[in-house]
Length: 606
Image (cartoon, rainbow, N blue to C red; front, side):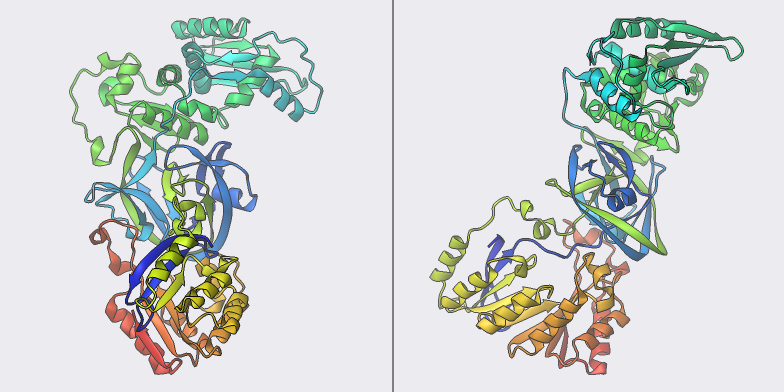
């Protein structure tokens, strides 16, 4: 049996008995943490809406809290009627999520990064976290053949190139990265509509930018073994440098996109040597026409407009990797950090000392950008929401680059989260020694009935003379029935999560409500001692829901209302619990409401 934890002594978990507790791994109910459909996620295949990832089951890897890309394990969707909208400073994209979705936040009081549910986020003390890519890739090359094979297949005609006029592998050098910067800023790749093999690559400059024109021509010739042709537009005062070598046009389209709407860089470029990335930024900002020297002198800022949101996010991560703090406003990246002017050779334009107010809205270190929160607003809206389960140690992914978690208790849901599983031999060895001193063993989880050898494990406990208590969510009535028939269980505690009609919504699973109802009937007719219990979360369950549950378990011995206590933060004082957690008086009111209906013999608050 997969065992993730073992508590050797408890006086409170088995009523009236001294017991040990075995924690099993794995759970078939998922926490209802979700985002609205249009929320975007950075992946190794581009920027996707979470709705598309879930509904189309897009296979990709997502950017995570460690700054790596991790595969998706499972996809979820459900409906909700309550959302929170979170707006950070320095980032114009708002996030809409369910109230209990966990974020990685830096809490200024605790002075560390913790996980906190959205409903508890404190705009005065908490900062959202964007991870910075950490690993490094050296000596990287781009395979030209990949571009040819992919795009010629797309064009549905046979490859005509038997001879490469350029190297099959393009080495990524500082000069190439600067050329790429020019391309991402003002370049394009296109083709004549009437000719399938007529791809070309082009770079457009202001006619006065002689130095950049010369630089582009030299690098292009050196890299692709072909010359760029100058095309002058006197009316617009521009010069366009064009290569009609189709293979080059294919190369730029495949790796970097063809126009302003879909430009991008390969994921690996986020991890290239920082000296290479600096040259990319130099080329990109050289070709940008938004920020004149006069503007820099007056406002002490650099601005660049990037229409492609994917590229905007990718460039943002590279800037953060270079230690350059900035903000994103709609389609623009805006920078006041002195490092950008030094990098671009424009430090001389900053002639007056300015007061740095940027830390009021966030700050930066080697691993993260910390975004101060502008506002948190609750929205009552019935809508579909979506979530992912990610295969990585931190159980994390990104929303608009911001790190989020997708599981409240990953160690209970995913067996991989246990680094040191406990063996049955160790459990039974301890219990053998404690015979006569311990009365009972409680089996909890996770969900114990998912374990294929649970029945055998319980049988061994009975052979040692222990009373056995089973905690369950009731989703496997067959296992409960077998345990009762074999006489290997003495006490059953079943969690009743919600009224039957809301079960799938609250548990974020496809559990059959009929199985829940069957388990309740089995337990009540078993002749054993038992209890039903509900952990009452204010944002999910109200008085009407609790009374519906009372009606569902009508005639039972005992019903426990458990107070929800947020445990995934280090300092509980930082939480504003009044908004979502039921206070003692409110729980007593719910208890009295159940008692007044006469549904159960006992109703207690725990």
